[in-house]
Length: 300
Image (cartoon, rainbow, N blue to C red; front, side):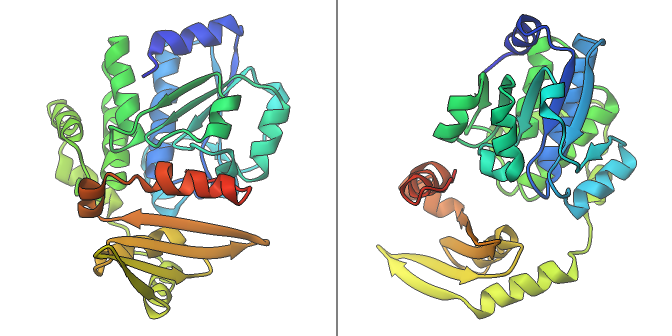
């Protein structure tokens, strides 16, 4: 894992003053909250740095609600990449998740630091100056919390609560947590934060369009038994990740949901904890990444 010292060393080596923090399309709370916390950490270490946080197209509905309480400006206009000295890709392990921005940031030859809790895509590793990618944690916010710890800096109450929200969202309220997750949550609680009260901000009624997409995914489901595992396939117009999650909830061991966007095929894959624990198959690393390369696309 990269350390705060490595990050600052890279920024100083490049004499970086203007920093761009990038989230993926429809950025979820883990992406937005880890960006918020990273920005605050770097400001505490190097107060002279200037920041812009950007996400293509939009951020998620829940992320918008979080930023109403913890303000941070997120622009959806494509940045002038050449106007920045370095860029961070948060919770984003493939350039494809940035849409057209991915090609443009490569063309700008910016030093790129990737921070994510998924395996880095080979193409991303080629363009990144530093990859802080850890599959042994449950959320990118966990990585940022550990960067605070390694820097010897205690996060402010607001930053700690934001990190908690990002972790809670990505672990489905700690259902998918690891032991390290609970240790961090315990430390955040010791800062005087009421966990139950803080999590109320995530209790947002699901948008009707997302609910309809989930129902359509269930209606269109096709299943196969592969070596005893139930593999479910479906397709929707949008919200494919949410649709894949609901197929796991209703009994699938592996869910594969596709959608089409401007002539491109987008696929979201999810698996149950039991499937992963018993097979050791990582859908991103072992299936999506090689499949993306085979089809001359990108996956991870």
